Image 1 (tube, one colour):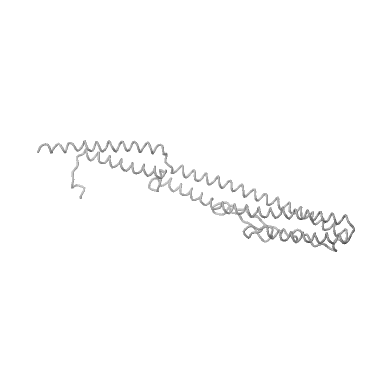
Image 2 (tube, rainbow, N blue to C red; image 1 turned 180 degrees about the horizontal axis):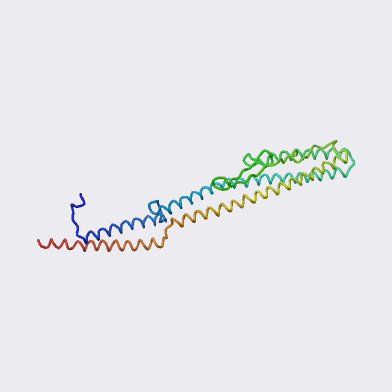
Length: 272
């Protein structure tokens, strides 16, 4: 049917246009109430829509880094647990060396030397076991890289070190500890090893602090970006609810007005 096939009075056409406008606004308000957003597509507000998209995308990129940071924390924690245990073994070995110095019985010294060598073996095994998902920071050949931002331009390298008896210069006992000089020499190496482990622990603790601080920063950034995106797109539900009530009232009034404006045309029928 063509536009000109049916003629409407000026009053009816005005009221019809008002009713159509009200219906459009009602649909928009219903969409906002259903989604909770006043900007649901680029057609609503291109500037706010794409700015919110960018903010949400960056928030998602940051969120994708959170898992790797959590894994990095566990890797560093595993290495730290290994250092703590190895330090305890070395301290036990020092006690054995003190016992060897306090006796002149070569048989006892020989047994104590064997105990020390057993501890060295355990240090090697513990150093090898202090890994998390295949990455062991008690190995000088391994480096943990933690990326913090969306394009990996911000990162941290946690460099491993050799935490076994060889790396700590804990050599096998010489002469079964039959000489005092051999015992004191090995005891000095133990002291040096403990000092080295303490330094490594401090380095790991500093790196762990950086990673956990970045985790907190990442959480805050995600919240900031999402809040910014919401501020650009979310609807005021109280206002939209009031709009709905007003539009429903306007729609009812427009329908009534359209009916009244048609009465003039209906009056013609009374002439027949």
